[in-house]
Each structure stands twice: as structure tokens, then as C-alpha cells.
Amino acid sequence: MDFLDELQQRVLPGDGAMGTELLAAGVPPERCLEELCISQPDLVRGVHERYLAAGAKVIETNSFGANAVRLARHGLEGRVNEINWHAAQLAKDAAKGTGVYVAGSVGPLGITGEQAAAQGIDRHGAFLEQIGALLDGGCNLIVLETFLDVEELLIALNAKHTLHHCPVVALLAGEDPTRLPAAAEKLRAADADIVGVNCVDGAQALALLATLSHPGPLAAFPSAGLPQNRDGRLCWPVTPEQFAATGLALAGQGVRLIGGCCGSAPAHIAALAKALQDAAVPR
Image 1: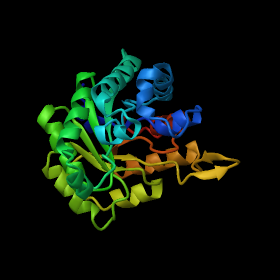
Image 2 (image 1 turned 135 degrees about the vertical axis):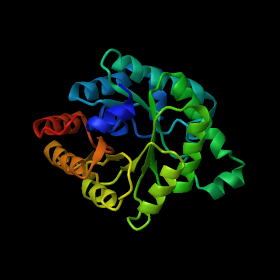
Image 3 (image 1 turned 90 degrees about the horizontal axis):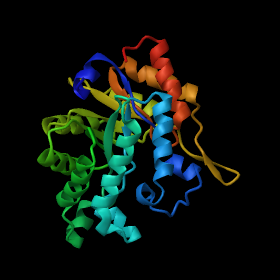
Image 4 (image 1 turned 90 degrees about the vertical axis):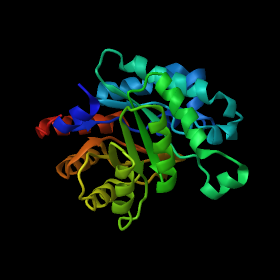
């Protein structure tokens, strides 16, 4: 079944955080997490497999910051195609035979438009390079996530449309509720198949998406709260049960794709998937 057709019939649980899972596994925070797709593929594959076992029906590649601008911080700007292709292949191999959709994760460039202009960076070209490699690696759809600037998100969206007709999810982070409806309208007008929010807590996600009244499927990937430092370890306060309750509330608001962002783990996704099933939410 086509991804967009399936969303019309049921709520699909996405996966949870990749970065915080890798850090919890002992990866130093200064490491380039996306490069692990090449140097430690089993570690990345293991995260995908745990989300699949938890009941995720959409998993995202470990490629959030794998654009040339962010990779340059690690001296890896010349390996965009290699890293993204391997990220897609790892997720695709993990999901083989499951019917689960593989989404290419694309984050912002990490610089402002003014900084990009001053440095002579072609933002559209940077997104083209990354998204093209993810599609070549076998992604079924693209998730543009954690964008604070709707104009940058529109550039990434245009780059995706230049390359392929596959579905695309456009997620904003921290958007002012008074501005979100206009931002969502711009994204719909630019042919985003699904719009929504991520990297906000559950209450914020519910409040933000409640401001949207126009038609079209919605997505939400809330975080597991704000991180807390406990004995030198970062912990997220939202329990799997609380996360699942938020997921049910989001489904009740008409959200069709629900996953997790920072701090959400396989246990959170397992609780979400079970809650959707027990509540007889079509999925």
C-alpha cells in the first residue's frame, strides 16, 4: 500500500530518537553521529532493529546532520553522498521484509541564511546533494525535521521536489503558535504532503497542532521532555506511559504519523504502539 494511502486509513507509529540512543550507547558527544553509519554500522542497525521490534511502522535514517555544512565541522564535507547512501542502506536492510517505511532524515544546515550568503553556500544545492544520496540509497520518503526557519524548510522542500515525487514530511520545531498556521499554509502550498512539529514536548505539540484547521495529514514527533542531569547522565523525564498518553491525545486531534524526538527510546515507541492498538485507533 502507498504510504499516503495508508495514512488515510490508520495512524502510523514512527520511531524515536536516534542521536540520544547512540549517546546512551556510549558514543562521545563530540563524534559525528552520522559517520557511524560507515564506521560502526552494527551500532546504528541495532537502533533501527529495536525500534522495529517496538512496533514502529516508519523508521528514519541516521542522517539528520549529514549535509555538507554540518559535516564540515568534522572535516567530512566531501563524504555527503557516501554517508547518506550508507544511512539509507542500513535502515533499508533492517526493515527488509517488514513492510515498514524507510524515511530519509534531513535536518537544517545549522547556519542562518545571512551566514550562508556571506560564506557563498548554496543552501538549495546542499539539500539536493543530501536528499539525492538518501533517495539513491533506497528511502521511501523524506522527513525534513527540526527546522526553525520556515524559509529554509521551503528551500529543502523545493530541493526534494526537484529530485523525486516521493512523499515528504515537513516538520517545524519551536514554532510560535501564532505563526504556525501561516507557516503550515506555505508548506502545503509548496506541496508538502504532511506537515507537523517535532522537538517540542507533548503539551506543546498538542497546543501547536490544535491551531491548524486546514485539511491534510499531520505529523508529530514530540520529545520526552527537557533533559535533566542526574549524576553526570542526561535523562528525560517523560515515561513511556506518559508518552503513549500524549500519542493517544495527538491521534484524537487527527494526527496520523506519531513518533518521538530527543529522549524517546524504543520503550516509548513500544508503549505508543500498544496504546494505539489497545484503544482501537485504526493503525
